[in-house]
Length: 598
View 1 (cartoon, one colour):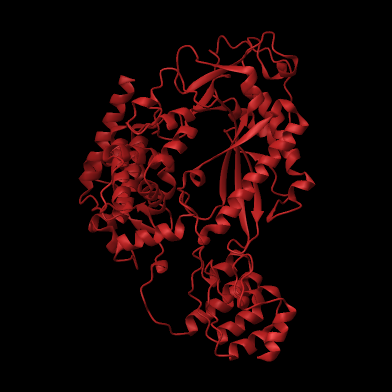
View 2 (view 1 turned 90 degrees about the horizontal axis):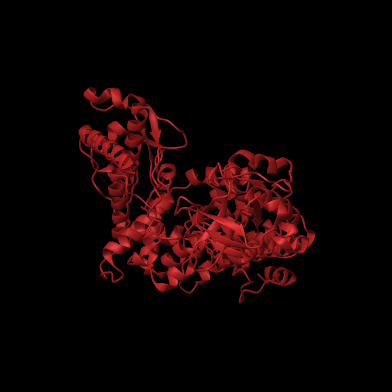
């Protein structure tokens, strides 16, 4: 082995040390250069453990598969490397090879997996949801888990495993295991702050500060840190404008009006004839500036992030959200695409709409109330929905718009209220078990855990007329159940249970209560945001009109979605078709009653 150690010294490898990513030397060798002969000599030495893992769970086979080193992969497999080891991203070596397009390595590992006879032990990562089950199958046996192949018998233990494997980070002191997660989060935020700094240099009217939002900030993120939401708080506009309530009063919207009249010359292009702020021309300018900032060379000269010119900044249809992608290259996340959403808004800390009473909610502390609300640049009439595409191709500058808004009751100027700052503060104020339960609720409905359902037959013949459109339709809980619904149900459950939870209560217990609360509120059409109770969250969809039969179909699909996830959590399914029919009919009548009352 003297020759081996001499070669290692040439590559500055030290068996007693780790590099900054915590890799063991054997993984370092795999990642540095193709050296099959050196590796073979090391493998011949009985003191080498080829299945040793670094702090992120990666083995030498993971690194060889990542780099596309076919000779090393063949050599490691020949010496019996374990192809089933799972790293911290829940990837086996074959999945790592597939993710990075190294298909020859993938085929080598795939062939080896079935050549070697291995111990057949039940391990949690082996379970993958089947592509689809039928409604007829569900009605045959009310125990959903018996229909799922390889489903773990101890779901309590499995739920703990899922939280550990899928949840990105916690609000507690970060562990070494999550070190790179925090590196990614910090680097992305720094980049967005730099972008805002560039925009400010271009035009001081667009001075902004960055407010991170979303589940990453709340401590409820599920999966790898690949999606980030930032609110761009418009300081200059907030300083020059006052927030006013519309007439007639609407708790969900508010107006921005310039303090001075006539409006300062530099802001005329963002004002109507009455001095009300107009968001659409402002967004067009902002889009151009952010696009320019993304192409500043200095932004990408250092660090682990990079940006491809092909992945251009674009606007999400119908929403004032600017989206782009950048990429992180590290050790745990060897190459990961990051989706960034930028949402412009005015933020005045502690501001709430008139007549909003957050203090009436039992969970709301003074700290939560003091966070207040955003005023997003999304109008009531949603004129952005019709002109967003101009920004993806051409910037049309609107100067001196003198549109008379009195007939439209300021519909083009009324901006949407968002309670995101207060919600983030509220979620962070809850005991850790609620955040774990909410994260588990999102995991339980994911496509990897929860199967889709094929409604393969109409329900009872007597009411076939109402459910005929449901036949041969598919239900996808991962898409049809919104995470925002689950978040608000978490708040409602926390209010019911209180903040002092029994030591015997588990996240799984609370997750089950969250879905039961969602089923209860969905049936009665009373699901509303915890902090803005005048807004209805449930709707049929984007279409403006629905037939009687279409509404029955939508409600049936919603019921099936909820039951499937509850079945995953261990709750029994309805035993007969009439149970589905009764739920749908009751919900349909309750919905009509609530509309009439409103």
